[in-house]
Length: 192
Image (cartoon, rainbow, N blue to C red; front, side, top):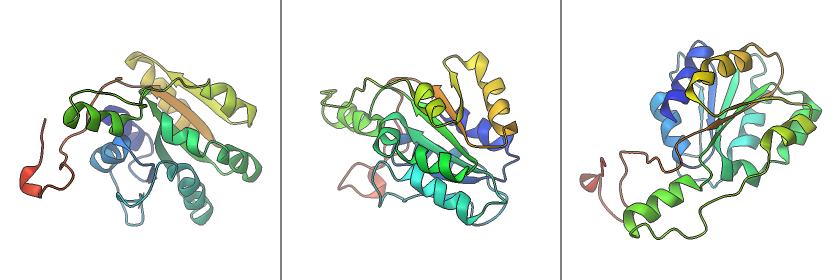
């Protein structure tokens, strides 16, 4: 996930607006996306819910039409506001949508792994064909399912004038660190 975020940032010369949904990619975005100027990070900061990212990215692009806007979303969060592709289609807002797909509600799965002895409940996802959905809304798309295809797909997205949907298959059970367990102090931070 971090590699994807870093390469997208570089493809936009570290000058795009970063928007994140809620989940593991939110931490990856904050950690690996670089910024050249202020007003470049739109995130709920832990006070939002899954589904925040896509409508927030649309708002960021409409509010700053001269800037590139890249939104990072997990596959679960994307499904919660997928209908906003219709608004993007109607407004032609050139939002760059990057879905980091691990076929899980990743952050929930991470907590279940670390604090509930790996007893996963309702976190594994069976996803639809996201490219077909994006294409149905007239949004160009690409799928990356191997590291070898990542650079070319990001370059294609960065050069595209309009909205673009990039789905990147990432490690199914990857974790994000550091993290502070619920109800703990910062001195209880987990690094693994």
